[in-house]
Amino acid sequence: MIDLSKGSRINLSKEAPGATKFTLGMGWDTRITDGADFDLDASALLLDANDQPVGGTSSLVFYGQLASPCGGVASSGDNRTGEGDGDDETITVDLTQLNADIAKIVLVVTIHEADARGQNFGMVNNAFVRILKDGNDEPVARYDLSEDYSTETAVIFGELYKKDGDWRFAAKGDGFAGGLAAFLKGYGLQ
Image (cartoon, rainbow, N blue to C red):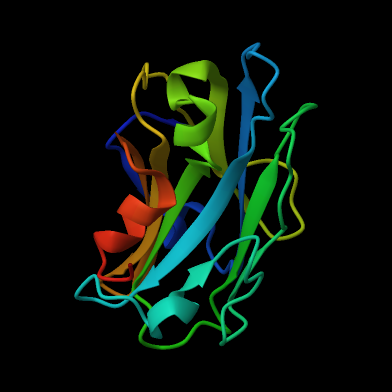
């Protein structure tokens, strides 16, 4: 397994030769809060080579739309507590089913109703994303987010992207305020 740090990249075509299906598992733990529910949500935004959404609003795979129209990207759905070990939510990518226009899949985790509940990623511990080949429990790579996100309500955990015919993964860790709405607005979807 390759341990990734912020900004590092791997070539999945070389690290997992022949693999066409990957599970992107994301997990986190929340610190004690004032009793308000703490609900993190993993989403995947499907972009073309020019970083434009493929298919408008249907380009977002999340708890409200569990699969992309092409069937190549699917969400495990909403885990409302984040309790327990292992992956809290997963995004599965089947490269053989992807729309040919998809060149990048951005993985973002947001805090549902963060502003109303006074929550941010500074209250989240042990956040990670790991990449597994389909049917394999041993990750190809893992990225543990270690920054203190004291004002951010959304974090881009990583990106799966195509370059020179190979699929690669970039560890991002880019946080921002405004949650999912701000993230989508950056791509002209709000």
